[in-house]
Amino acid sequence: MQIRKFWFGGMIGLLLLVSGGLFAADFKVGFVDAERVNRESAPADDASKRLEKEFQPRVQEIQRREAQIKSLQAKFDKDALTMSDNERRTREQELSRQIVDIQRLQREFQEDLNLRRNQELGALLERANKIIRQIAESEKYDLIVQEAVYRSPRVDITERVLKALAAGK
Image 1 (cartoon, rainbow, N blue to C red):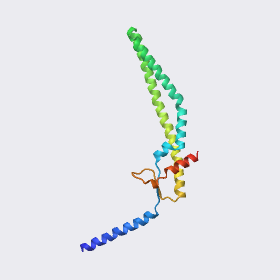
Image 2: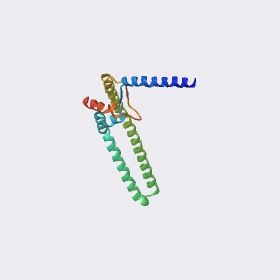
Image 3: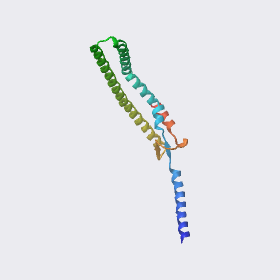
Image 4: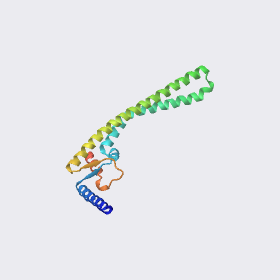
């Protein structure tokens, strides 16, 4: 009786292996490295340049204000011993106010930059996904994944997606 169950279980396992092999022969899988698309694609590079150009005036303003605060701090440190208590307190308050203002500006800048970067990234991902769908449909892929613990270079279609994004500039 035990031998019969073992034999029956072995036959079922063998059938599953054979049928799995047949299924795998017809199943076409592709992989796209989304991080690489974000880093290396022509549209990602264009977006980065647009963001840099858009935010450059604010970066320069923040740098100018930081230099101004450093200068005021150095002047305050130099003159602190010769100032009256009232003048020292007034200058400390002014310096503190400017430091708070620059911190607010930096925080707003970072928030605005992150928002715009996410908008640009969203547009890039939308374009990339459209291209991935086109490749999948034209080459009859059953599945294309963007995250994997391991992938064989033969299923990686990232380079084709990068070329298609560059061509669609």
